[in-house]
Image (cartoon, rainbow, N blue to C red; front, top):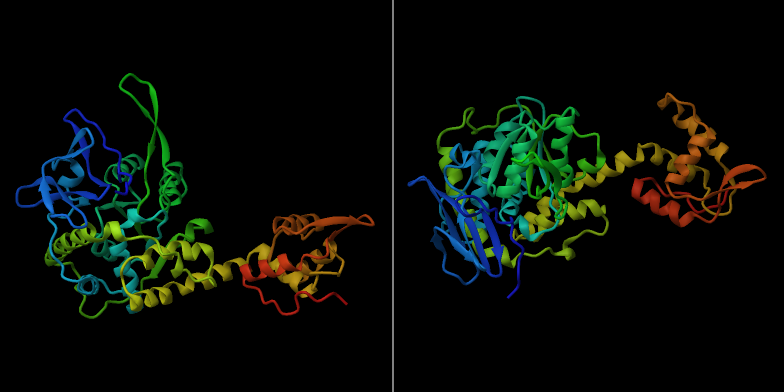
Length: 440
């Protein structure tokens, strides 16, 4: 039988070994919170297995018990757990129900409904993948970001709600213990030391194998380094974007629009919590039935798109959502490619490439760095507060991977680099017209 790594390493405690979730061989174990008795228990299932409710589970030589219902996060509903697996019919019916629930309480742009529905489903099987996208609702105040986080987050897998006002330590501990979905509001961090620590959650949390190391002090005042696993789906609400382009590339962003959507209540009714609880139970059954059959499908990648875009979208496309919803997701994320190319082409490196392409310096033409600097200053110099020197341009040229050498005491671009120039221009979204011709 195939072996699957546990979703969280069992943590021993004074009352015995505690466990939240585990995928082990053909066994799927998850913690539920039974609202009628206010207790926690394990639900155990898997393909071809009868679903069971248990008070403990034996794995190997160890016996594990669920985290107690007295846990502060469970007690105060900061972490939302299902209460029991519930039949949902077929998958198409479940997807429609998720979409209807979201639209009932959130005024989303219509073309984003498939993206949100698919992301919710992804959270329930996210541990099948090694990389994940983040979902972001972005807009000014009054556009419904917080409402979207609350409504969508309430049906995600083991959703944990936090905000930019939260301190670092409990977030690390909660993510490490529950291994669920972080729902993070007001994520426009100012980079104080503590907020920089919170950004590490976003920088490291979309790929397996990158835990955050933190030092804890033992009761004997000894320093004990510990690794916290923060991998998992994350949904954030923001007003702006991050300056770090690498971090930005991890997000699938929905731009929230001002105004009140017809039919959406101004205040959330109590019914929303009941609707969310029923959906969590159906999604738990989906996880028990489908988790072990889900694999990344590299054939769904689009070779014309950026590798990072394919990387973050493939997990969404690999879950069983059907071709129509996959096409709708591609339509929603196509803007990512346009934004990436626009950002690169307007960067300093992109502007240097624009100059090189216009000078047709790909093969036999001998072009000096001073010529490139002069053309750059003529076209883009007014955008910079610093002078455009040959030394600075040389740094940019070499950063792009072009070779230079001295010719009669003058630094020039080495001929014969048209292949690299073409490749970089495609990556930076710069027109190739004229590239490869020799200078006149």
